[in-house]
Image (tube, rainbow, N blue to C red):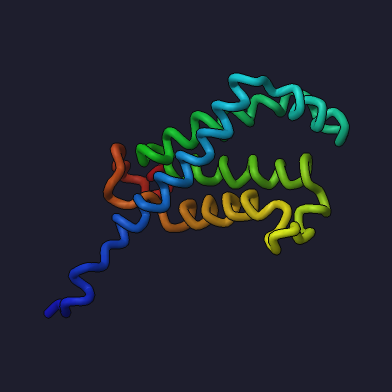
Length: 141
């Protein structure tokens, strides 16, 4: 017999409520870069000795992956892409300063760290049943 508290618990709804803001907030960053360009990213890659062509991963991880994540299509892969691009962002844009405290008491790169950890959480937990695509292979969900 189910108790009344468990009747209100819904893991799939919780996963949806994590996917939507994570994908939505990341999408704003991607759209901004589509409008204003990727020159900063290209120059940062070159400055760190990485191939400039890696900038292509940014629109994929900040535009395509967030849309797929919101829809629940290839959500685990999309979440992992978002985490990966945020790890690169920590390295390219913030470096060691990522862990400095701001004047408001937060970490310099707390949003990056948030996206890394939530992306990894979605990768391991999956997207739930409120997804457009429900594959047989759960690693594709």
